[in-house]
Length: 155
Image 1 (cartoon, rainbow, N blue to C red):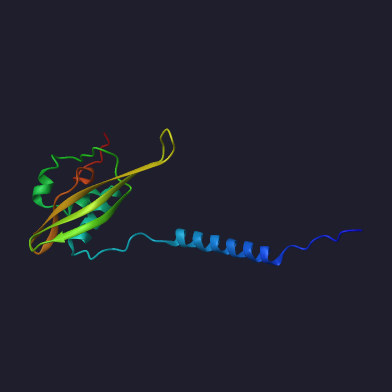
Image 2 (image 1 turned 180 degrees about the vertical axis):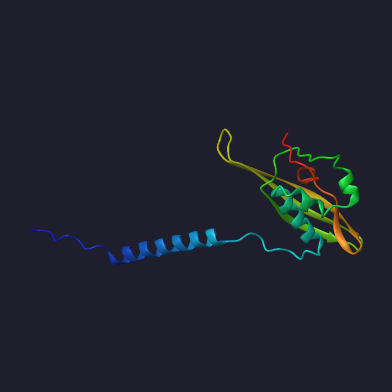
């Protein structure tokens, strides 16, 4: 008796098609996701977001525009960086008072090389802000995000 070749199971083909479609949709979502939405630039958290973006981008002139005179005086004429620039800063919480605010953030560092491949670590710290002439300015930034008008110096 001669066996006829089996036709592919239609359910299996349909299932593989659905799985393939889900993979394509998941990849599309991951690659089309934008960055975080911009916060209100007049809010304390918005000022921290703009400042942090400028520091990560190496734009010390823009970052300097978000600092109080007191914060600028701590610079000592240059840029201090105890570590490489972080890869991102994530908002944890904001406490606004009439003339001051505290913005807690998670600072994430990524490294592409290492003995076991890429790695990532994070730390929490906070910004202290003061309201100067009705505008939020940073009075104290976490040391890894201190930017002063001057060249970026890696230690």
